[in-house]
Image (cartoon, rainbow, N blue to C red; front, side, top):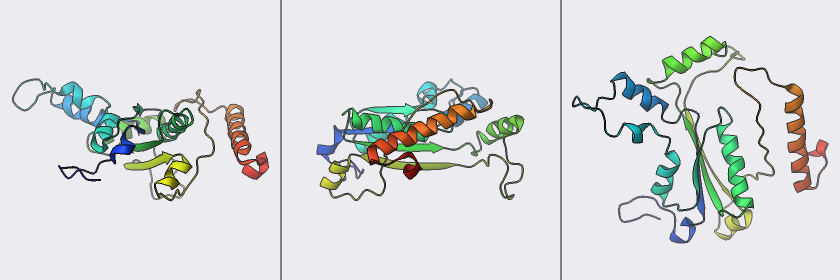
Length: 212
């Protein structure tokens, strides 16, 4: 629905039971670099009194206010896994009854003017950057920007309000122990994948091989 200011807002009955999760690896980093480059000057020779509000990661609160959602809201930063982790947390919120639906948004811009020289140099220093983006496969990370949005909701609630779900999140699993600059533990990763497939199998009533 649209309010008196022309903003798109959630219908009143949905607001209290709608949660928001914003996931980002570099939330606020670009603005921090920009402000530091000019020593925090607000343009009048004074230190910008809005310095902290501008660099703090608060995308979840901004989105919740924009759409009128008053359910739980949080920011998720978990490296390259930020969006999957956010989806897993959203599923937990639904299972535990914290809310009936969660708006999950992910966004990052490492290739923007403020960050590309730092993030690009960091990836090059690690040996993780693709030096030829036209190669197939590129042989490393290709810097870019992107955003995604997903509404995760209980099936019954979605059908009741006339929505047509396009996918189902059957199972999720969170596990630590993996860092960008350290070798992956293949056996540990294999155990986690098998465990996730097993969890999905219990929900679907199918065997491990069928799920895989």
